[in-house]
Image (cartoon, helix red, strand yellow):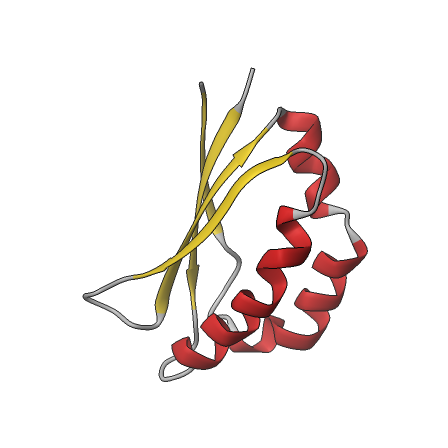
Length: 94
């Protein structure tokens, strides 16, 4: 059963554009993951420091594998300081 995820990521004030650019570089790596069906980035019109990632995974195991990928660790190490806090995940099964 597929797993749909909305990840709300808030950048520190004024750093939304920089964080968006970092995510745009990350997206092709994530889309290449075996369990990834969809990985799209959106920016809030009301708050440019709020990003929303729309994700679709084959299953929960695929999402768990995604979180453990080396490129995700590297992203957190390099760009985690741009975030105001951890991403807020909303997951639903399809």
